[in-house]
Image (tube, rainbow, N blue to C red; front, side, top):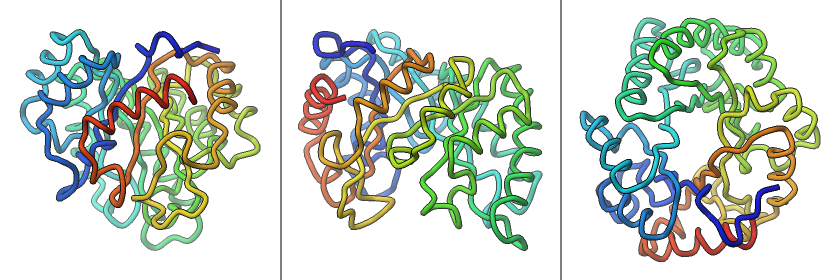
Length: 285
């Protein structure tokens, strides 16, 4: 397992940790200020959200690289299934536009949060079939653009409205079903910390399918399952064991800190948040 105590260049900031994924939260720093703050603290890379990028993808990507950082990824496609994804053509157009943005930004990975149970269906089986069909259409387009697609399974509490894809097992199954070389998985501590089958499924995925690793913590007494994530070390996830399993399965890429925290970390000075991230990453992750 990698030692981050003296070298945290594998550390990536997902800008959601500063509240930049939702309107009305965070300090409102522009991408350039985030880039400079991360470079000053020795972060290796940054992951942006589409809403921050707008029409400036190429320019922001160049700015990141000029600061000595890399763009690790882009969040995220629109939902591919569920109540917001009933118009197939509009869904695919939006997903392909996300791929275009990732390519212009120089982001090697585009994260897919898939969407919830599709209207007119029950359970998740039918939704997963629709998802597989749409991912199979998107993957060749992304491949031609040099972009990898990372399916992110979410905690089962989100199955109804945010992600019918809730386990790493189902994510690996979907990758195998579609069979695209640029389709893989993003493993987020928040969503998999509870899964007793995690190590087995990570080995199934292997280095060829593990495209991302996201860090935060699950608070035992969370007040909001979406917007009350914990800073690493403040919750109940076994961070060292999870990373050992992820790296044991062959992952050697960035470790992306992604903390949704409307009532705590998003209210703090971003400088403090970034400093705490570095300290916790080097000592606890």
